[in-house]
Length: 267
Length: 250
Ligand SMILES: Nc1ncnc2c1ncn2[C@@H]1O[C@H](COP(=O)(O)OP(=O)(O)OP(=O)(O)O)[C@@H](O)[C@H]1O
Ligand SMILES: [Mg+2]
Image 1 (tube, each protein chain N blue to C red):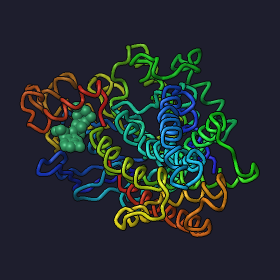
Image 2: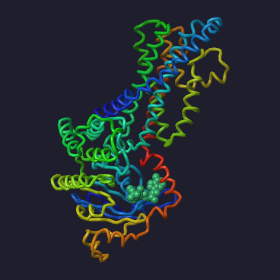
Image 3: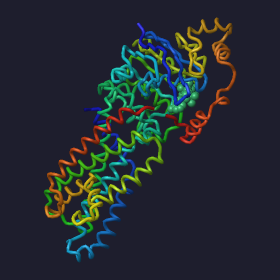
Image 4: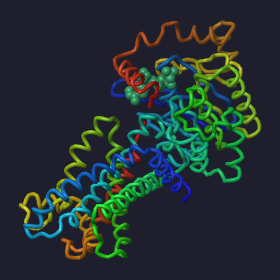
């Protein structure tokens, strides 16, 4: 059974097509990687899947529900770690976790127990009462990951979860996720720019470029298709070697500027 | 219920942690009270209108409430900028609940500002007509605060930058405050000002506060009318606010 079905999905911003006619499906319990260069349309796709933005056209079914027509049912089905910051800086680390646990209806005893377990897991337990604004970038990221794992959803979206994390933490996190995937059958949909992560953990990989899916298959299939030895080489041969910022249009420049102005934060 | 509570609690915690905001939003109203109350008091008295400080205090409480509550409602703009808004928007909680939780939180914060202003005016010489009536006065404060927090939320749902915020302060909050009956009596006004004052929901909040704090004689519309108007406008803003909040896209 497919827990995510996407048919002919498109998203335009004024006349710029960020996502163009993509179709794919993810099976229940699968670990699915969504790879692509900067600006390819990964986060835009995730926002449409997670009810944060409406598709321009196309169909999405998530756990049997349509995110536009039945947003509440869809929201009950997934958890997400965003690419951009999403913590409340004025609350403590613990309060951020607690807030999330209550919003997602995790019962009190289980909630307290999981918060402690996860905060120890990301090594923030001894900082639990510090305000998040006092945290370093990596600490914030670890907290966001712990928070994303607090309720156990059917589908977990991870948009560049390992961005800015040290190799130890990255390793640690992927092991935990594999475990969760095995024991609870949680479907994992993630993006990353570290090809070796996708190679190691993903059962299938979609590669998106300029808003279109240009390849989809297992890591072995992608390597065979391009005749390359590693996923990184396969990725480069599929998407080309041009750095994306160079061909960024005025709109991208604008967004880049806003991104910097916000100190790296982005909506 | 628990989700509404945690959203409420978040607003309260953020408020208690920003000492500068608490102090900042008390200084301005107190300045108005002292400067106008004592400065214009003698003129007011000579014009046969009675004690100006007594007249002014409900208006100044209204001032503290409208500023704090619209700002609280508009905190959504900050949440959007710092990214936290996404976290609440993907949660399996209806948007109406999110809206209600936040609005109750903002309204509680603004009501406590109103109570603090009331206590501070007692220090500078204000006398309550009847101590027991301070309780319904607090209820009116809360209703007014709820109304304007919902308005702030509604507006903030449509705005995504700080310039927009400045515009709202200058072109909405200031006129709503100055053209309500906060600083002057509502009788014998020029027609145009009178019409605007009658359309301003703050006018009714302050008028009802006058009834409970300064005595029935200070009330203009009748406290029943005040409460009916406040309640209906609150429901209207809450409805519009949830509708607009529901349409936010990231
Ligand atoms: N709100 C928006 N308004 C205008 N353009 C947008 C908006 N959001 C995204 N875009 C554009 O859509 C394109 C895809 O962006 P998206 O964030 O989905 O890329 P991505 O694949 O996640 O890239 P990255 O690896 O850098 O995170 C980019 O060109 C971006 O500029
Ligand atoms: Mg992205």
